[in-house]
Amino acid sequence: MSTHIFKTLSSVDERPWGSFTDLADADGVWHVKILCIKSGERISLQRHFLRDEHWVVLEGEIDVTLDEEAYHLKKGEHIVVPRETRHRIYAITDATIGEISVGHVDENDIERFEDDYGRV
Image (tube, rainbow, N blue to C red; front, top):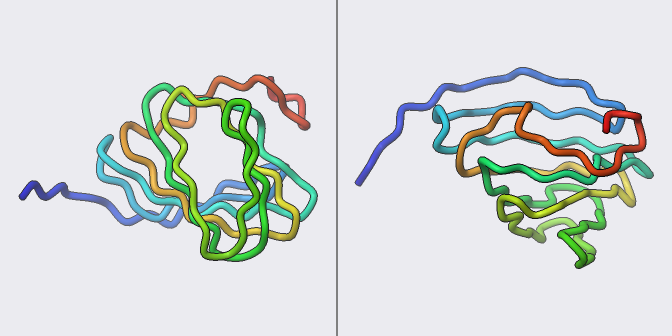
């Protein structure tokens, strides 16, 4: 069994759509964060090349876009976002999402296609 040393984090990063809190990181192997998205807001339509993501809805309701597919998720439901998949979350209500990333997490590893806040 392989054991990775990880660091506990607690940094909060404010975004126009809400915020995210980094919780733990295992140096390019996995990363855990909590996304808080305000009702009626959405993250940019984006993709990553270095990581896969697994989202779990902890509170609220969201609509998720993965490439050309649309999904509606409620508290307790989850979805996997493979690397290189274009993805977006829209919060129908205030939403809290647990995100587990596998691979290298770097906030510069974002290719944005659309953004409501001028960040493309």
